[in-house]
Length: 292
Image (cartoon, rainbow, N blue to C red; front, side, top):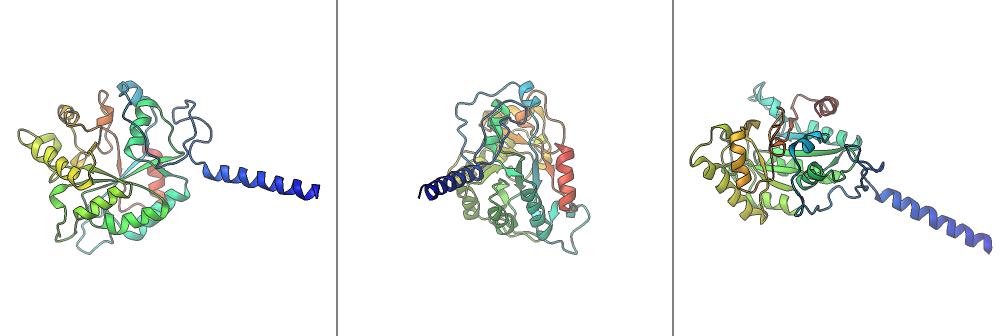
């Protein structure tokens, strides 16, 4: 009887230990990406309270290891009418699924802007192998193909919406409706602004600030019921003169493409790389490692 009791207790301890181990994800070595001691990140999609975070100085932000951020556009199969340059921005469906499987198999965990903001400003812990997935231009395939694929992996993403295209049907591509955008937001993804009609940010003057920033922001906030805090530059092009206009409107971070971050405003020149339609999962993996 005594032997049976000890066996049951031992089994319980093993089971409890196993459950505790399996429930923990993230930095198990107790350090963040800069080598600072931190608490283990237990949930990659847990809400982050950033209301009391003070923006760090540029030198501190630039010193932190960059988080890989991927930029996607269309996810569909190539057509005979697609040109060589266009295919760079179109990832075929099976290739996209294989890329996402590669990320999951490689141990990458998706993070969202609040987590990135907290990390860059305070060094807050991130999950192991953090990555951010972003999708530009409101394409319908981001809802019909991308979202179901990411759901299966427990991944979340950021969708940068160009408001002129909402609900439209184009000659070559259809676009998401307001209801679909809201659903993405309600499911825990983040909706960001990508201007009204993709006009080059470097050329804004006069009423452009209202047409390309204010009106799209209001529309997206009405759709989602949430404040817009993230902005993606059309074509990835930015200028330092326009950054105060973004700050004035309450944006916290802005995303360019692969050029060098600004030494004064790194939060408004966060780097992304375009996931090319020509890349295999292995090529994507190598590009992530080499770019960040």
